[in-house]
Image (cartoon, rainbow, N blue to C red; front, side, top):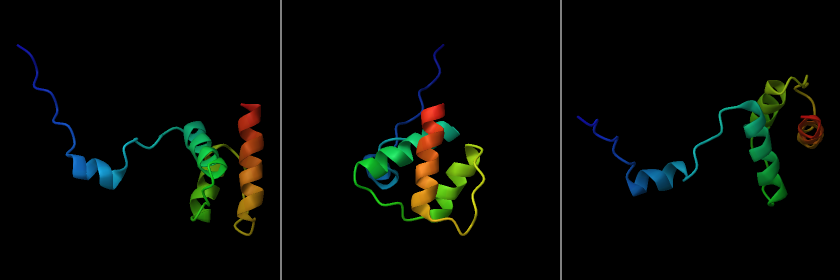
Amino acid sequence: MTRPRAPLLPAWLRRLTGSRPESTDEVGQARELIRAIDAGGIPLNPMRVNAIARALGLEVSGKARVEDTIARIRSALERI
């Protein structure tokens, strides 16, 4: 007896949420952030950038500039 397959998400829901699932691991999120920035994106949420940096083990001040934090994330990814 076969198990019924889970239904696929409707097309309209995939468009709302994006076609790719978000990466759940810290390194994957950091790589996605850097990839988006390199493609011309601008990080709109500094708290998210700081959270990704902290997940990588970096100490981040709430007063740190986003550009500095992104540079530190790049450096951390090069070491990994």
